[in-house]
Image 1 (cartoon, rainbow, N blue to C red):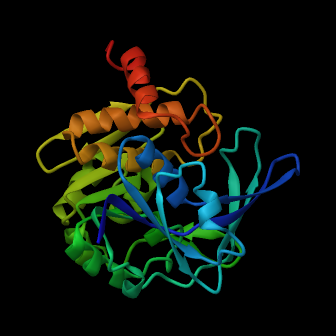
Image 2: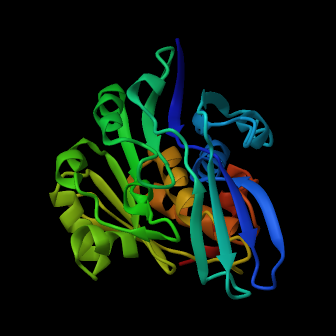
Length: 296
């Protein structure tokens, strides 16, 4: 029996990115990569339960730059592929379209010979991770969920965000919940992200993280914690939320909320300066914290 700190449940995606000037780039992406790389860099022992067609997106090759990550491939006849068409040079405006989907994760995909302290659900669209996964994962360890894969739906021509129908049933099973400010509004109907965090906690999630382009907040039922983002540039903005959440989870295994949140904010601030998943070290993040956070 093998044990890891965090098992990330999420597929790889063949991303076809078309820039505003028409240049096309094909690359293997997905929340599982940004999450896995940042958690491993932050000292956690990580396993990636990556489902998909290896002929389209090979998980072993995708995680090769972080050989310390335990890759557990789960075969699917199909693979997720997403088209991103960027309309501006800063890549803030884009049109996303799903080209194909994986076969959904099922409880039988969870390996019986690997256990984890935290099971981190990091899918990409609704249907990737069926709701029936949450109860068996929560029984095995602490459940962490990024709600993107529960709200972002393939509408054929585009992808749009909708409320999670079963949220009141499953939120009590979730120890760590992550949304961004827009997703929190969809879930709660509240435009104030601080109040949205409180309501999501009242509905059952134990620690509610909401990311914003200026800060990351977390509500634990007693205190509202916050840490500012301080990137020096935004070249590597893709993967911001995944990096923040996974960095927090990695630190939360050993540290309190405030230290874990400040670390996650510093980690994503540093990551945003370089495209791709975080390739730095834990020491790099602490040096960044000393220079830009500890002087506050």
